[in-house]
Length: 125
Image 1 (tube, rainbow, N blue to C red):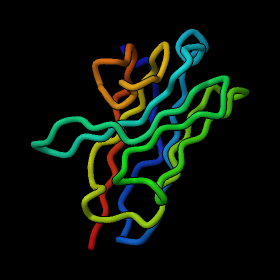
Image 2 (image 1 turned 60 degrees about the vertical axis):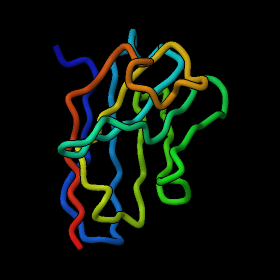
Image 3 (image 1 turned 30 degrees about the vertical axis):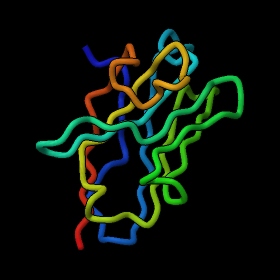
Image 4 (image 1 turned 90 degrees about the horizontal axis):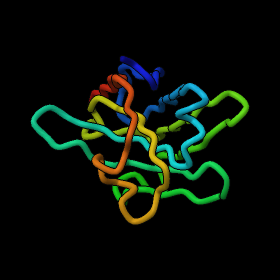
């Protein structure tokens, strides 16, 4: 049963940009922490960024700092991931997820209660 719905993936050349969106029903969006993850074939799912609902706190993995930006629009129950300066190594399935809080485990998949089905991002060199 799909609860979070991601969109915005696609194929771009290296250096290009994409903006991913994740729409959640209110009962999920009301969770305080929304995160973005990705998983490449043969690799573990890894945390990219997370954002709190009520306070201006964001979290980023080192490998995306300065390139990706997470934001949310509470009026639309939507979380975004703006991805700039994309690299071929960013190619993966991208997922959004919801948790009751962020904290030190924000980048751990097991920390999250709800997941979307993912949207594919492919970056060519």
